[in-house]
Length: 209
Image 1 (cartoon, one colour):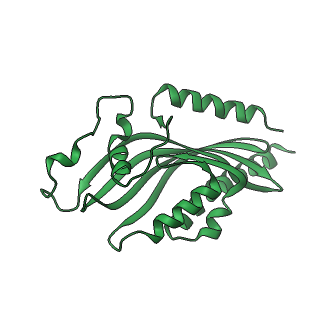
Image 2: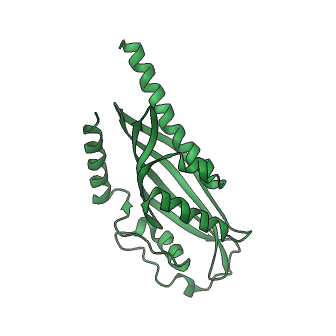
Image 3: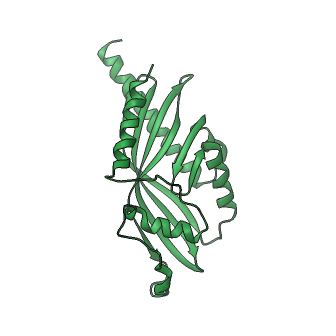
């Protein structure tokens, strides 16, 4: 393969990989579940703030959440800068994301923003790039009442801003009030967990065939 052909193939691979994530975001936020499923390999796994398990399980839980959402509630993903590292049939994609939610918590309406990075292990099978493993690196978050001044101080009891999970403290508070279990081992930005995740990504690429 000539240098030009190699460059064109690299550009094509990077485009197809990042496109899968953009299709994922649109289909997830607009309840296109069939298209969402096509973004994952059948044996793909997911570990995020409210779920750890198979990609199929993630989709089913997302369906349930959408079906039970009140008219005022919203959920969206705004994705931005991305870096794809490709080695033959494997790739690592890291993409900036803002996770935007509007929820009722304790009967009050809040906007929650999580600033994070999706860290994806991609694999090309039968000529198609799909997600094999999806993790999330949490950098910071915030929680704002839609109606300022309406929140009693007791609402924030249990909020922990001074421990190793402070990058997603408000997300943890939100998930608890929604009755969700936060999986253990979530990856915080700049942590030892991020270093381990990146080492796993390097090993994933090194095993490319």
